[in-house]
Amino acid sequence: MSKDLSPRQLNSRFRDIMSTEQYFTAVDITNPMQIIYKGQYLYVYIKNLSYAYLGNPDVTRAQLPKREEFESIIESPYYFIFLGYDAQHKVYATWNPHHAKQRLNTRQYVSFYSRLSKQIEAGENRSEIHFEDSKRNIVWVFHESLLPQVLSKVFIAFENNTLYVAVGSKARQEANRAFAEFTDRKNAARFDLYLRQKGDIEDDDILDYSATISSLIKDRVLHQYRKVFLSKERISEYKSVLDDFCKVEEIQMYSQHIADNVKKAMILYIDFLAGNEIIVSKSGELHEDIYYEKCYTSQNGKLTKIANPELLRLLRPVLDTPFKQTMVAFRIVEDFYKDRYSESMTLSDWMRLFDAIDWSN
Image (cartoon, rainbow, N blue to C red; front, side, top):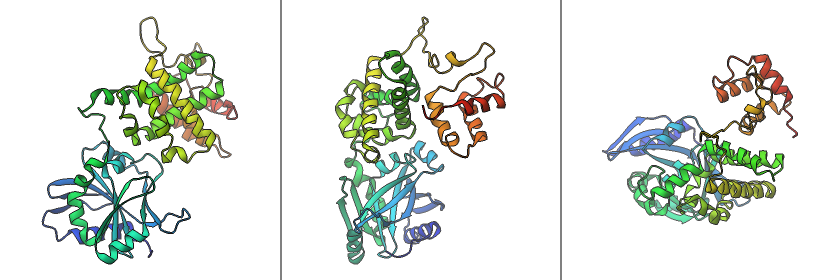
């Protein structure tokens, strides 16, 4: 394929094609663009299609990066369209827009795949082609002259090709409530306490399982594949779809050992939520910090050890390295604990705790 176009050139080409359309307005021309077309407000993000380098020269891809600007799109009610562009053959590729929006900021880069042979065919015939990739996702490849028509019908075309159910939707409320509970980060923290109370799991495994669940929630992997879980009404039924979840791209990329741990952690997490086995005080209030902080807070209010697995996971990239970024670590603990230790802990206190962390354990 020819040389990639710059983001500015990709946007300019898109606007040149759409500029003759009577009902087209460009609200914001940066990438991602904000447009109004035929009364519909849309976000459009365009990347070059390039070789995927997976051993098959016919496989191409466009990569959706992790960007801060996408956070507002994730929370917005508006549609998001991801387009890949092949400048040599003057062809676009697009994918299910519902799935594309769900995958925003779930990983550093998310790949959407196409086929060079289909791009060439669509370019030569000035046509559109629908086909399935290796994971049975629908890919829509079309000549650039057909862009207005595709934008007019893309959501109709994909409407029945997704099991996506928004968490706030009135449809299947019980399933939505179960999934919201399943992906609540507070439950991920309580999960660690539950594992420690069980008494039959090694400390290393507890940290591993807790970090796994926290990562799946924080990195939005569970949200990305919510359709797997939303096929069930209750959390107790989630075990029956775990095999399907463990086959998804993000899990298959792990080593076999890590992939096995994901399944083990998920089984324990489902048992925990389904049984509602949460540490409760006499007053009935949840104690999320019984193990992490209360056991390691002195009488004068100082933290004596960093034991919270979620905090350790956040600190590892900046402290478990030959070149420690201690000021970044300090900002992390400030954000994590808010005002909890602002008066009792000094910078020197935190430095001593950072140095005392045993990353080999």
